Amino acid sequence: ERRDVSSSMKYVELMVVADHAEVKSFNFRYLLKSRGFLGNKITVTNNPYSTLGAFLAWRRKQLPQLPNDNAQLVTSVSLTIIGLAPLKAMCSEYQSGGVNSDHSNSAVGVAATMAHEMGHNFGMSHDSPGCCLAQPEDGEPKKKMLYNFKPKELKRYLSSGGGKCLFNPPNTRCDCGEECSSPCCNANNCTLKIGAECAHGVCCHECKLKTPGVMCRPPSGSCDLPEYCDGKSESCPANFYLVDGSSCTGGSAYCYTGICLTLEQQCLSLWGKGLCLLKSAKSPAILK
Image (cartoon, rainbow, N blue to C red; front, side, top):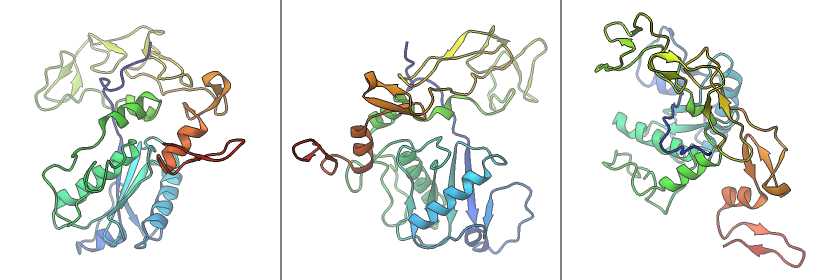
């Protein structure tokens, strides 16, 4: 049975990085107590493509020390476009991230740009100019930044196996917010009550860990594998899938990072309808 990913809780462990130009623009000197400043470790130019490539390469090297699902760079360098991010890249070791120019006097402006770029990482494309995670053209935040986008694209992306890292909650024992109604938690200090083994998570039931072997994540597609509670953690184990290169769809396609990819799907994802050419024995045909 395939899960309904739209109704499952998802968590994005996001790393936001400010480059040297962004930090310098505020005329502060920082005592670095938490990692999040890029400094001059990569070359940030007004070319968003080269900056994005350099940032994503830096992020990949930092993953062992700074594990994250997605990373977004904020820079004071005026990029030729205010933001850029790969499409359908959420959770990718190589491409899960984006670059954002601090283009507005309002913090909402750069936050909206970041949401826009993360929308691309989640597989959402533009409907048309001015629509779909509408980018603020004048640098001022709009009242409806998530306007007229395609929620079906997000659901399709998640249902196909994308965003595999999002279904495990961060390592919090008992953080239930200001209005704590959890029967497993002490609200005053965010600790588990006496006798409670867990507070939340798909492998937690009535403050007790589920027994080993209970399925906690059904396969999302032909390239995905089911996961089971281990009896030690409230969270479902990391998502596992078939080895890259395994055949799927009756041998007509191959698995890659848990997603069954056909040449047609990849071509459409990269170039869109009308631009993708299918080579046939007779003559090329344009996908419509």
